[in-house]
Each structure stands twice: as C-alpha cells, then as structure tokens.
Amino acid sequence: MKKILVLLILCQFSLWSQDYTLIHESTAKIIAGEKAPLKEILMESYKKENESIRPYLVKAISLTMMSSGSKATSSYVSKISKTYSQDLFKFLSLPPLRDNCETCDSFGKTLASCNKCQKGQCRNCKGAGFISYGKGKSLTKRDCNTCKKSGFCGVCKGTEKLATDCRKCKTHGYVYDKTAFKDEATKAWQVLLHKSAELGLLNEFTVDQELLKQDEEANKKGLEWLNEITAKKEQWETQEEERFAAFLESQKKAQPKEEGMGEVVVESYIEGGSTPSLDHLCKEVREYLKAQEKKSKQSFLGSVYGKFLSDIPTVHIVVTEGFTNASHDYRQRAADGFFKFALMRADRNGYAGGIGFKLLDEAGNELGTAQNDTFTVPK
Image (cartoon, rainbow, N blue to C red; front, side, top):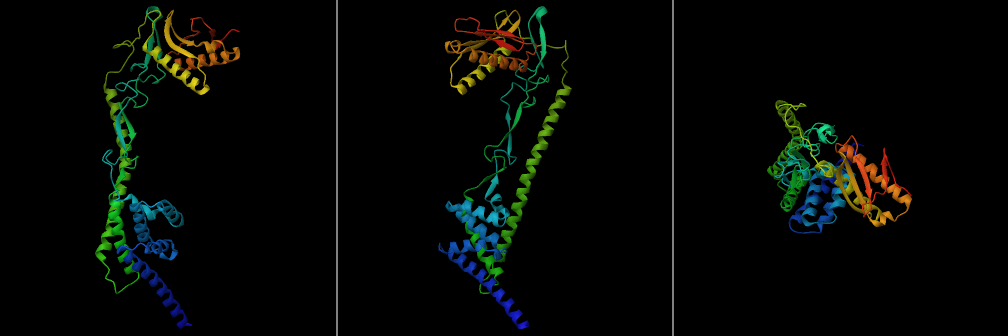
C-alpha cells in the first residue's frame, strides 16, 4: 500500500514537472522567434493547476497581444478575469506601462477659471445679493434667488476657480506609455522562462535569480506608486476644502455688506427701456421658445424683448402669422405655457414681485391678457 502511495506521489510530481517543462520549452521557442508555441502557452494560462505560474503566463501573453494590436486581447482579458481574478492584470496599471500625468500632476483634476461668473460674483445681482429696480418712490429691492442672497457664483462659490476633470488622464492620475509595451513583453517572456525553470526544478537550466528578484522588486515599487496616486486623489479633496476655507476666511476679514453702507447696485431705467436683468430674462425665454420650436417642428416665434411699462418689467413675445392663424385651443395652451415659463424665470432672475407679459402679433396687436397666474387668449 505504501509503495502504491509513493508511486502516486511521484507520478503527480512528474506530471507537474512535465507541465513546467512544456511551458519552459515553449517559452524558449517563442523567445527564439517561433509563433506556433504561443497557442500552447495560451492554453496553459487557462489551466487550473498552473496557479503558481499563471501571473507570469498572463503577463507575457497580454503584453504580446497588446504590443501587436491583437483583436483577441479584450476577449482574453475578459475570460481570465471572470475565471480567475482581475488582479492578474494589475500590472497594466503599474510603471513602466503607466506614467504620471504631467497635465494634472497626477491629481486627476485641474483648476480652471470659472466661465460662469465675473470675479466670483453672481451674474444676476452683480455680487450685491439683491436686485433693485425702479426709481424714486417706485424703487423696489428683491433678494436674488439665483445666488440665494450670497452674491457669489453658485458654480465656483465665489472662488473664481473650478475643479475640472483632467482631459488627458480621464481623472486616473496616470497615462499609458504605449512605447513600453514591446520592451515589457520581451522582458516578461524572459522572466517566464526562468520562473518556469525554477518551479519545474529544471537542473539543466541555470535560473537567473537576480532577474526574478528585480521583477518582484519592480512589482512592489509599482504597487507603492499606485498607492501614492490614490493618496493624491484624496489629497486633492483636502486641498479643495482648505482652499474654500481660506476663501471664506478672507471674506470674513473683508468689510461686511450692510444695508445703507457702501455702494448699492441699482439698475436704472427709463420708461419704455430695459435693464441687463430684464434682457437676461428675455434671453432665457427666447432660448426656451426656440427649443420648443425645434421640438414641435413648428415655427411660431418672431422675437422676445423687454420694456419697463409704468415701472413694471414687462416681457414682450412677438409671434408669427402661423401662430395667429392656428386653432384657438393650440394658441391658448401655447400662450399659457409661454406665460408660466416667463413667470418662473422671472422669480429666478430677481423679479419675485412679478412681471408684465404681452403676447403680440407681427402688427403689434395684443393677443390676450394676463391675470394672476393665467394667460387668456380670446376666441
């Protein structure tokens, strides 16, 4: 019984040695320039019993596929990842295949000037926190709903800088060094040659232990580098918090804005004229109506402009003949929709006290009347 057990152990050991011998011999042929053994090595990387040498097989095969532009690369990576582990391809995220992104200094993000504001101020209220319109006894001041009375840009929070994703590295913090693939593939085959000899106890082959040691150290340093990149992303969040805290502190040191102190921004106007805030509101209404035209594939918009009539900011919408000739039901639904959108945007633009609204044909005739929150088009 003992003899049988010893024979089984020797037989199993012989089979394992034979596998490593096959891998070693096939690798030597590939290094010599033969292509046929690649299929044998590929099949060996799938075998469950090759767990110890699988990382070396996968690395050599993957890098060879990538350097040659093989279309089978993605399917191979997918199959190995599902059968075993994605960690087998972690080397693809390490130097020298990866390099620091110089554009963002490996943070994955960069600071850009905010294009949504002027010097960090809310565009709607010009940094005042409120909007004033009218004159004399008609002077009215309303809180700015765009910035919630802060006076700061809602995008950059008043700092004038905006964190944006790095376009070069796509937030990873590192970029591919495509020139390294071919050299790394050649090196991977050499490492596989010596590792298969070491695991297979092939006495007739002298294993270069220094080469294997260098490969292990390179992997170790690569993982440390990857951890540093990950830490840098966390560091970015901390830096952003500190930057915003410093900005808030600088604002506290500045003289606070108090009603009756300093310069109050008031939008002056003349009867029948407009203001930047009213122009901005009309622009939003115009863009909305153009979007509706495109969506419905109907042309009905002539123009949109603003005027102060009896100290009331009034939005004027001029429609085309096609609109005036449409059915009453269509004109009623469309006009009421125009009116409700204008009211909504008016509130966001600081006109919480309400606006005037006129719907006109091309000749300047009014097509309906606004009352409370409803616009009525007569039959």
